[in-house]
Every structure is written in structure tokens, then in C-alpha cells.
Image (cartoon, rainbow, N blue to C red; front, side, top):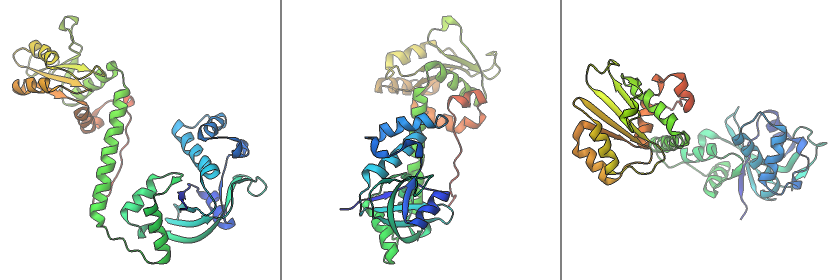
Length: 323
């Protein structure tokens, strides 16, 4: 069975592709891409010419060049997207890979393509739109290609409920964002996590200070006035990448708490059932914060953090349709 692929080309490169009946990618300095056995070799060579670009961008370019050279076969289907007109162009590959700077000086890596249809993005189901937005220079699932091809013949009508599909897409995006944030937090050092937690406590209206050396494993002390004259007094213990916190470790924090004290135990590796039981038995004396709850607190109070703390875990706001 022939495969279907999506390749990212924009601007003049896209204009040339559609006008000449080709798919063409750049980097003439790389020469003939058949000299590189795999994506890794292409990326290594790319890095010699593109020192200003990120690793992820190099990965994207290397993947697209490798796909064009080694993966696509004559007869395969090809999809490109024109952001200006919000149209997908469909084609079939009619020729093998060639390196021809005389044919296309700026984009000498090319294949011949017969472009045969344009599909407005709005005609696709939400599921297909999401799938096409996610892929960058890689293979399409057959169901996505079949929907595109059916639309080109006028015999497809999206059947899914638009609102349900959009809600599902939003939930998927939120879940993925939380996982990526947790991954970033996990890469911080324990000192940086303590710094971040201290900032979150301040964002909740407390004044923090470093506890005295005699306080043992406590990382942060906080109070409403900074002097500890008015309750509550908050004592925070932090463990990062040290394994699951057990009941005995939690009891050590509980033993440090005096009248009017409240405790917070932050563990990015979570808590054992015994520790959770000890916290429940202590009532409102102590709060446990695992990685999920740390992400929750970060999202709630992120805008109140100072620039130094935001630089530890830079986030950007994403807007989503309200309904």
C-alpha cells in the first residue's frame, strides 16, 4: 500500500512547488542528500551551517530532508499546507529524489509531484485538523489521508460532533502541557525547586525566610508578617528526586511543628500510602504536595512570580476558543 506524507514548505518555496509540479527543500550547501545514510548524519551536517538554531529546529529540518530523500516512494501521496489560503494541496509523487541546483537553486532537493486537488481546512473534521496540525514532515495515518482524498472527490461529510471534538482536543493539549511542565520541573536541581516553592509561598501572601541551621531538614519558613508574630507560621520541607517519601520522614516534619504552625511537604517523587495516612491523621496540620500539585500551584500563581523565578521555568500563554 502506498503511504501518505505531509511536508512543510512555505512562501516562495511553496509557490515554486505548486507552479513547477515538484516538492523541493533547501540547504544547497549540504549537496546531494543521498550521501547521508540517515537523519542523524543530516542533522550533524546541518549543525555546521545553522549555529543559531535550536536542537528541535534541527531535528525538524533533518527529519523532513530524510523523509524526502529516503522514505517517500514514487506513487506515494503528498500533502502540503498553504497557511495564506488555509488550503491543503494533495498530490502524488511521480519521480524519485534528485539533487538539481540548476532546476531550483535555492531548494535543490526535489521530487516530481502531480498536484491534483485543493482542500479548504474548514471542510475537514476536527480530528483530521488536529492530526494535520501536529505532524511536521512525517507520515500521515491512512484514515487522515482517506478523508482528504474523499473530500477531493466530494464524497465525505464529517460526522463527529464539533463541540465534543474541540473539548477533547483541548483536554489532550492541557494534559500534554502539564506533562511537559512536569518534565521541566524534574530537570531542576533541588536548590532551584526550593527557590521556586519559596516563590509560590510568597505568591500566596506569605513572607519567607531561610530557617536556621538547627532546624534540620526544613527548607523554608514563612509567616504573614515576616517576624512570626501572627499565625499561621508555615514550615516547608522539600525533597526532589530522592524517591517516594515514607511515613517516618513525614513524622519528622510533624515533630517540628509547634502550636500555630502549619507544615507543607513537597516531594516531586510522591508519597507512600503510610505518609498519606499520617497526613490525613494530622488533619489540617500538614499539606502534601506532589509533582501534580506543584504543577497546579505553579499554574495558579505563575503570573505573580518574579522574573528570576519565571526564568527557571519559562511558560507562555496559549489562547483557545471560548466555545
